[in-house]
Amino acid sequence: MAVRKQVLVIHGPNLNLLGKREVQIYGKTGLAAIDNHLKELGRQLEVEVETFQSNHEGAIVDRIQAAIGVIQGLIINPAAYTHTSIAIRDAILALDVPSIEVHLSNIHGRENFRHNSMIADVVKGRISGLGPLGYELALRAMAVLLG
Ligand code: DQA
Image (tube, rainbow, N blue to C red; front, top):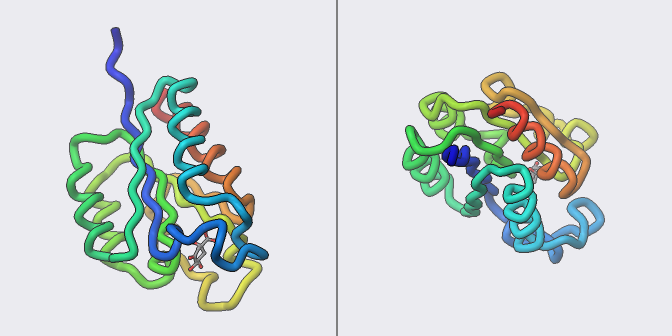
């Protein structure tokens, strides 16, 4: 039996508050529902999905480093760290697997400081503004990329 490809999904700061936080922007779906849906979809797509959320930049860097040589694809919503974190960018470069950047909201339709992404040019693709559906589309795309 073929070994399943492993995909890591990382959620950055404040995404643990999804469903309670600024629902007019981020919607009513909680993070556990998003993660459970991705794991279920992973079973259908025959990829192993692991999820991780942290409010701490260093913990996200540590999680990416621990995935080096272990996972084949990364889906990441760095949340506010999208706009600031060279450390997460460097960790993604070190990981060196196809990565997809996801944002629930359309970061280009919001404040100017959200328009910049420190990881935009090091990821394979980006999805922004489609709410939780963005994660699902990212996982479907990743399954195709990993073939
Ligand atoms: C976000 C957009 C970021 O600007 C913001 O800081 C977040 C969430 C999104 O998913 O839309 O926390 O990454």
